[in-house]
Image 1: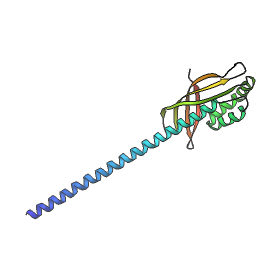
Image 2 (image 1 turned 135 degrees about the vertical axis):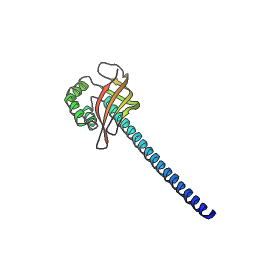
Image 3 (image 1 turned 180 degrees about the horizontal axis):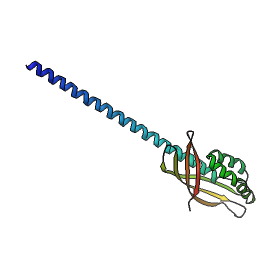
Image 4 (image 1 turned 45 degrees about the vertical axis):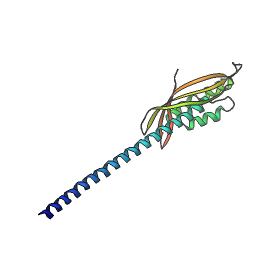
Length: 166
């Protein structure tokens, strides 16, 4: 009788250990999946912020000398709809740059993602720069705050909207 009790106890102990082990494997798998999703989401947020920063830098670093090339580069980072909107304003903007002999240089100071999904993100960008034109004697310091709406198009973050914040 003692041998039968020992076998039952061993079988029960084995079954319990097997259930605990399977539970730990499932929990570890769930944690690994969750970690992977967090890393992917953080990577997408970083990519969206970097793309927004690049586009803001392109926008605030314009000059009358190279406005056409700069504008074409800017369009490359825009969604089809936003590109269409920009093209409608292109000639007036380029003419104003040439008429006023504008020369602007800028750089992004910081960028942060306010909200993001796999398909879209809202990025706030703070930038600083200098602007000179025919009406100024010396370059003037400028600070910019820009809300940039981004859309993930074929694994590439593109600007779908842009708004300067006062």
